[in-house]
Image 1 (cartoon, helix red, strand yellow):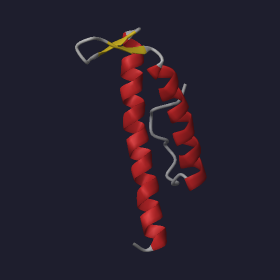
Image 2 (image 1 turned 120 degrees about the vertical axis):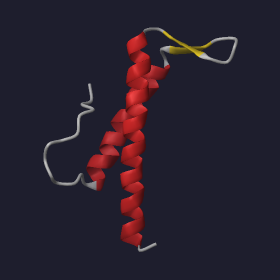
Image 3 (image 1 turned 90 degrees about the horizontal axis):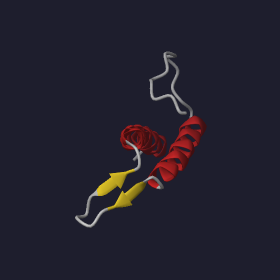
Image 4 (image 1 turned 60 degrees about the vertical axis):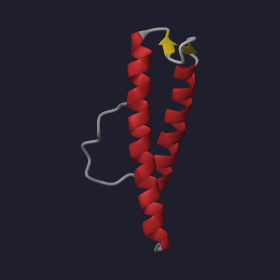
Length: 79
């Protein structure tokens, strides 16, 4: 299980660490999506409630990490 708590260390994550974390999160999200089914009214039904909460927590973490990666890429290229 991936820890969703922020690290207590003050050093920034390297791009390699960010990329590795994003890959792990993407794999877990794919696994969680296997437990989601679409119902006729357009909504989704989850096998278990915990899957839904974990999915949304991971998507939030993924958005934050992607934002950090994009900001660093922009700063490093001078755009």
